[in-house]
Image (spheres, rainbow, N blue to C red):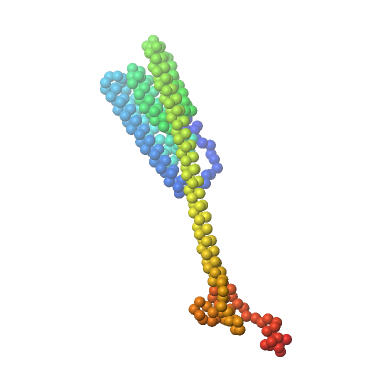
Length: 302
């Protein structure tokens, strides 16, 4: 039943996704490592449940045959290996909820229901075996997912009671069994609503975190834009200052000879007009002849 659920929950084939960036790949690896650590906690829960079952049989609360022990251990081993392969090969990323918490809860609860069927006198204690993995979903599952898991578990328990009554109607204490079923339902329902409340808080925190990240990114972009604008302004100011320096060089009273038109510089030297202007500005001269000078100095070319 559990793996039929897992197959049904796979996403439909989609168009190939673009390759992940280096940052996205790092985030994905970190998330997978966290999921593997959580899976390690579920493995410890399996071990604790097996030890508690062994202790219960030694205390005389119930008894299990070798075949039943083999089935329990085989079921646990099969589940641990299967989920480990899904996480290790990243196949869990193809599911709607990559942590597979819901699937692990349902899978591990089957262990508890097998014990409830084989050890009916210890059902009140075995409830603890089922609640332990169920509580793992409080930090992951949404209210709808919790409700689905609760419905599945109550359905399994109801089926178990039907089998008990069918096999031994005379020895079936309906009042006691209904009391346990009601108690079990109340506890699971409480976990469901509390888990839903925690889910809402997680969603609000995530929204606030995303909003804060967006504001922070916008603020950083604005700072970078302002820095870039300031750099451009500084460059422009430097260019303007250089231009103004060149312009100021040719300002004021320039001493020029009234006859030869040479100009005296700051050092007292006399320079030709074109040399002085070339040294104190970006202007360049190209010598030519005007019409008057052409007639005066080169009349033969008139």
